[in-house]
Image (cartoon, rainbow, N blue to C red; front, side, top):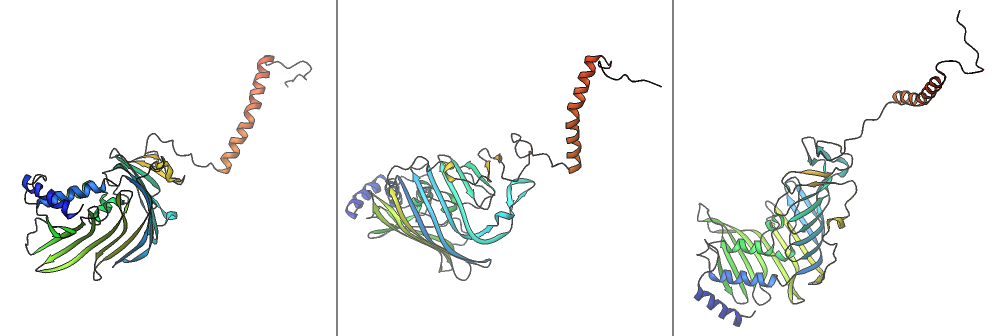
Length: 381
């Protein structure tokens, strides 16, 4: 959409008045217009498969983590999403995993620096996930959060729409845009081709100290978000906290992300730096039927499976080496303890003696207790 098309639309919107949600009467009416166009353009990207490569760097007082990352994405519509990721970080040594006796769905162990791996598939309202730091995979409602698992996923279509919280908050495009639309003090700054949505945190007791947000949108290239910035304002000073930048490219009648970069914090406290490069395998093409089937994860046979969709964690399958019938009454009882060598010998002797005793009893019943013909009679003194 060019500026010649934008201006008449905005004029009509201004005449009709604000159309945002209740509580957003103070919001610039242009905000709703831009958000509507962003949703319209993102809806054109209906399905896709891509591979993301990049770098992850984290610096903190707890230690530094740095290394390559790789993520495979597949999505279709708003209800199907899959992500297979590997990235550097602290992991639990799989050989030293221990279950919590009071709650088997919680595990602990010794952390080491390594490569973290996880798989997530969102299928309608349910989500199946696996993190290598656990001895099991889990099934839960999409909007639930597995507090016992370090887990994240995000839809690549949300790139540049919100801060890194959308990664762990598992939001889709509609949810990200709705968060902005509900902000009562949002406004649009016209910078020509790029329009900037600006707002600030609400409820801050000190009017000179608050958090400022801005989202830059390219209105002539699919209303794509190209820069998202968070700054802490204190006594007139501006202190950058986070900056996200995104590059987009036109493919198959829509725009898809091509590159993404996120910087969080500063060198004096905490720093997280992530770069993504997208390699799109397909855009708006039919996907394989089994892509969103959790069975295609090819989980190790040793993994257990926890169903937490009801709010209660129930093991459908115990991890290898775990045998606790209290976890689920439907599971078979644990195996009996191994017997000692002496008990095995006694049981073996009894098993051999039983047929002989039965044979003698049958013969005795046939002769009525009398000696058989030809047998030597027994004498008594």
